[in-house]
Image 1 (tube, rainbow, N blue to C red):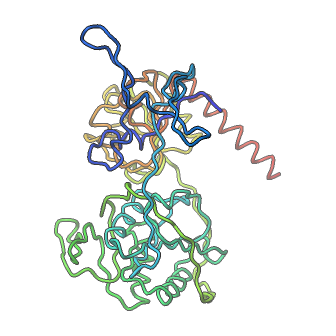
Image 2 (image 1 turned 60 degrees about the vertical axis):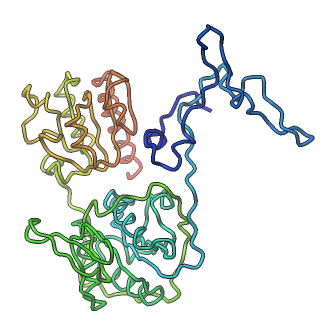
Image 3 (image 1 turned 120 degrees about the vertical axis):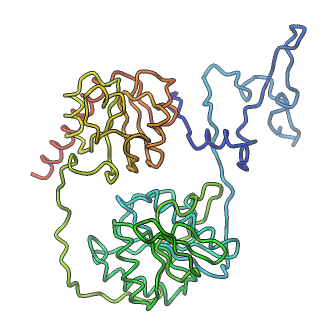
Length: 409
C-alpha cells in the first residue's frame, strides 16, 4: 500500500456542508485536549473504541492503533458510503438518454439525471439508455436505478436513425412517463427532436426548470421564458437541476425483450475531423491548459498545449502582463468555461478565476504553493516547478505517440 495521502474532495465538501445527512459522520473526533489547569483530558467516548473479543464482549483498544497512535500518518479524509436507494417495483419509469461525450457522463448529463430523480420521486425509477462503449464507472452515484446498455456496430459513430429505432423499442417495453434528453449540440438535441417526431410528441425545448407539473424553457434568444404543462418528452438545458449527490442507486442492468430492427443507413459517417485546438472557443473547449503568473517559460507552455492537444487559456494576471491575448482570459471577468478537464499551471486561484471554472468537471492544478486556493479547488494537484512538469508531460506524450506508431507499423 502507498503511504501517499490522497484527498477526497467529495468528503471535504460534505464535511463543510452542515445540512448534508453525512456531515456529522465526517467530523473529526477529539481524542484529548489540555484542560484549564494544564491537565490533559481524554474523551472517554473516543477511548471506548475497541473490538469484540472471542467471548462476545467489547474490549477497549489501549494500543492506540485505532486512535491514530500508530507511526504512520493517517488520511484526513474518510470514505463516504452514501445510503442506497432501491426501487424494486417502480410505479413508473423516467427514461434518460445522456450524451456520454467521451464515453463518460458530462455535467449536463448529471444535471439531467438530477431532474429525472426529482420527477421519479420515491415511487418511480430512472432508466438510463446508453449507446456503444463507455468508460463510466459511477452510474450508481449519478442517480440511475436501471441501466440499459445497447452495444453494437450499428450504434457507433453518427447513427441517429438507428438510435431512434432502439428508443422506440424502449418506449414500447417500458412506457416511460417522461423522456429526458439534453438539449445540446453534441447529439442530444438532434436525437430528441428525431424521437419526438417518431413518437408523435411535441417536446419542450431548452427547459431549465420542471416544477409542479409545469416546465419552463428559454425562448426569444434567451430573453423570454415559456411555461407550459410538462410534456412527455423534455429537452433540458444545462443546470436544469442539481445533480444527485446524497444517495447511491442500483444501476441495475436491464435488457430489451424484442430485437431492434437494423436500419439501412442513409448517412455515411466519415469519422471525426481534426480541428486545431487553438481555433476552438474556450467556452466550447473540452480540454483547456491555462497559464498564470507562475509560468516563466511561455514558449514551453505553448509547446505543451500543442503536444497535449489542449486549448490555451490564461489568468487575468498573465493577460495583463501581455503573455496571452484578452480573448484567452478565464474567469468571471473573462470567459466562463465548462471544460471536462481544466489544467491550471501557476495559477493561485483568485475568486473571479474560480468562479469562471466552477462548471468544469475535473480540475488539475500545477503549482509550487500547496496552500493556494487553486490547489484546494483542484481534483488533482501536482506540487512542483511548472517548467519541469510541462517538459515531462511533453516527453510522456511524445513517447506514447511514438509507441503507438510502432505498434501500428
